Every structure is written in structure tokens, then in C-alpha cells.
Image: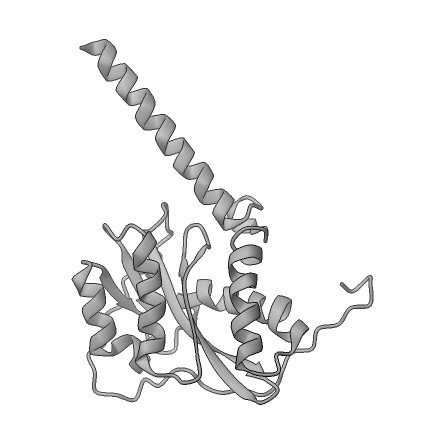
Length: 215
């Protein structure tokens, strides 16, 4: 971009998406020094604001910390807990929740009864960032940074409808399917997950063949 004279200017306007001043239950940090070793071992959730020419909208997202795939999103006009809950529901529809940790900040959306009850319903372990340690949720922060530089700032959405049309395309077709990630061998998240699934299938198939010979 520098060689071609393309500049992307970061917006200086800012609005907070985390309200931790509440009396709801908070949960301990379970991911200190944890390095994910498989898909659906650790999900990281967060909310960011999306700048519009007419104001702000908010995006809740859930990322698989191992594959870097975005598995749940929801765009909304307010920071109501339902924003985060809808992103979680999307992730739950297609993922495995066995032995899974869900990590977030201590914001009121993630501490709400609706959100934590849904996690408990699926036997998901709840983890929350320690106070003053945003690095715990660096996976989500990295995604939001890429989203804004590579998509939001380039298009300068006029209104909610613009954002609602463009964001799903970027997340599903570009970020998950085309964008290369150095942390997973310079592959897109979806390709990375498919390779792992094929390897698992081959391992199971070979194990069955060995078992059949032993019998």
C-alpha cells in the first residue's frame, strides 16, 4: 500500500463498548498462559464500534482462537446484551462445545444472565479478562483491527444499511476464506480448518483399518 501511495487513516473518534460497572457475577481468568492446540478449545468474544457518517453501530464477534475463524457475529444499533447473545447463538449452531472455554471482558453484556446462562446450558467454561489486562483478548482485538483497516475505513459507510451489507461479505468471503494468517501457516481460517478435519478423518480411517486387521 505504501509503494502504491494508498493511505488508510484511522478514525480518532471513539466510543467505549465495555461497561464493567455493574453488580453482576464476574468469572476468573482461565486462559493465562493457555496456548490453544485444537479447534473449539477457546473462543474469544468482544464488541467494537463501527464508525458511520451518521454515527456509530456496534459489532459483536466470536473468534476461534486456534483457527482464527470468525464463528459468530451480530451487528446492532445499541450495546444491549442481546447483541452479544445473538453472536453466541450463531456460533453455537455450527460448532462443537465439548471441553470449550469462552473468554471475554467483564462487560455487562457478557456478565448478563442471558449470556452466562446460555454458556452454562451448553456446558461451556466461562473465563473473563483480569482487570487491566486487555492482552488476554488479543485474538478479538487483532480481528477488529484488521476489519477496520481493511474494510471499514476503506468504504466509509454512510448508514446502518451500508454496514449491514458490507460487513458480512468481508467477514465470510474475505477474512474467513481468503485472508492469509501468519499464525496458521499463511492460510485462510476456513482452509486451515478443512485441512485439520481431513487429517482427523484420515487418522480415524487408518485406526479402523489397523483395528480390523487385529481382529
